Structure formats: C-alpha cells, structure tokens
Image 1 (cartoon, protein in one colour):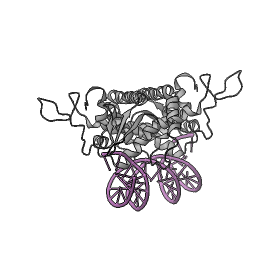
Image 2: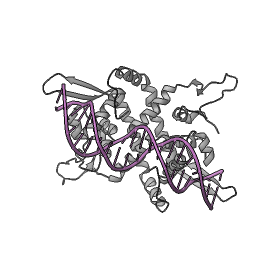
Image 3: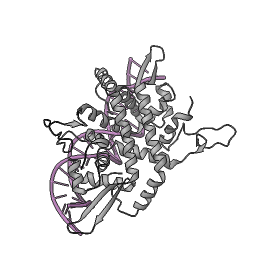
Image 4: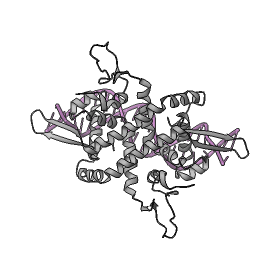
Length: 160
Length: 160
DNA sequence: CTGAATCCATTGGGATACTG
DNA sequence: CAGTATCCCAATGGATTCAG
C-alpha cells in the first residue's frame, strides 16, 4: 500500500499516539517521519484536525458565512444566525477570533459597540467551504439514493 | 446587507426552525424561498450540514483518507487508523456506507472477509478535503500567531 | 475475522438569569 | 448593547465484553 503523493493529508490527520502509517521509511536516509521528503510538522496535523473540528460545529460555520457579507455587531449577528443562543454565539466568536478568522473591534461609546469582521484568512477559509457545497451539488442524488438503499438495515447506530 | 451571489452557502446552513435570513424576498414575485432565483432545496441544506458534521469527526476522515490508497479489510483498516476502537471504526464505516462514500463487500468464506472500498463520490469528497489542507498550509503561521496573541485572555471557554 | 452490546466519562450545547 | 455565569440534558466516543 503506497502512502505517497496524493494521500499525504492522511498522515497529518492520524493521532499522535502510536502513529502506525505515519512512519515512512526513506531509503538511504535515517529513519524519520517525513511527508513527501519534507519533515513532518505536528502543528500542521494539529491545525488540520482543529479546523475540521471547527467546520463540523454548528454555529462557527454560520458566523463565518454571514460575516462574508460584511462586518456585523453582536446582536446583528445573533439575529442573522438565529436561533443561536448568546452563549453559543459568544463562544463561537471567541473561537473564531482566537484562530484569527475574525477580528473584534470595540468602539468606546455608550451604549457599547463591538464589530466583528472577517479577516483575509477567514475569507479564504470561507471559500474552501464552497468546495463542500459544490461536492454536495454534484453528489446530492448519489447520497440520497445511498441513504434510501441503506434504510432497510439496523437502526441503533452510535454515529450518524 | 446583501445575501446574493457569493454567500449562497449560508442559506443552506441555517437551521430549519425560524429561518430568518433564508427568506429572500424576490421583487415582483410571490414570496418564496429562493437561492439565486432557484427554489431552495431543504435536502441540500441538510446534506451540507451532514457532510460538514461528518468531516468534523475524527475517524471517518481518516478512513476516507486511507481508503484512498486502495480497498482494505476491517482489521487492516483498524491497524491503519490505529488507535481507533472497533466500535468507532464500525460506526464510521456504517456511516460512510450509508452515505454512499464507500462500499462494503462480503466474501462468503471462512473466516469471513469484508472489503471496504471508496466509491467515486467518496474519492471526490476526499479531494475536497485537500482544500482544507491547502488552506492550512497557506495560513499556518497566521493561525498560530493569532492563537499566541489570544493566549493572554480568559480561560473558561465552552467552545474550543 | 468482523463485528454488536453494554457501561461510563467527557463534552457540546440549550435555557435561563445576571452584569458592566 | 454585549456579553458572562450557572444549570442541565443529550450526544460523542473510549474501554470492555460477548457473538456469529
């Protein structure tokens, strides 16, 4: 089983503990973990997983999408991605800000005004999301049919 | 705030309950939910969210990636994406099969042999994943710096 | 070999109330 | 307006055991 070339992403996704297939022996070189000859960067692995986890969450994706239309204030966002709760919106915004996908600007006024704005990184990540949507457009019937065909089988599935 | 054009994905991601921004009033037409003039398809919304949820999970992504190298049997897969548990691998495989991303072929023999293989849909979805990896490659320093800069702030965050 | 069933710890995330 | 704090429930997912 080859590991080179197109499937390099995999090696960045495997967990750190006992990484079996990550160990790619390069002939003529000392045993080291490399990806296409480049030394593996654990932080890249971490970040890919982190981003996939982010995109799998409900609200951050929505926030990213609505901010693509321009900067918004907290309650504007809250209405835009309703029915998000304050808690979840706040948590999502902090997570996105932490990763540098949005900026948080406080205008010292009464009442307070806080503006959230997409960064360039956030904008480009948003674009990557459209690839998923494109895939769905191309495979909607396929998936729907597969699910229908699968319907007759057992029901108690831990994962959806 | 405009909703047209580039940000159509958003409207497919909003929850069904009380969809605020989904309702796009088209002047001169009867009030109906449309996306770029095309009637909205709730099942597409569902599927996009479903796929994002799938990609946010730990093991299905890994399974998809390793199967990109060719078909594998259950225990081969288990070793390849170690340290996955049997339960999680089984659940992931059923989910992927349900969505038509992989096929499950049982060879009637003793001991039993089951082969899992990527479908064309699974292969193309795999490709979409590389866009996330590309984004990470382009923004690794940005995100790392943002996280470091954010470090000084409060600690109790419900979302990561 | 290929799973399913059971038990249990952690976490996501909603409702509500309160604050500068 | 822009949040934080608390409570609580359901779902995720790991470890272990059982079965065809």
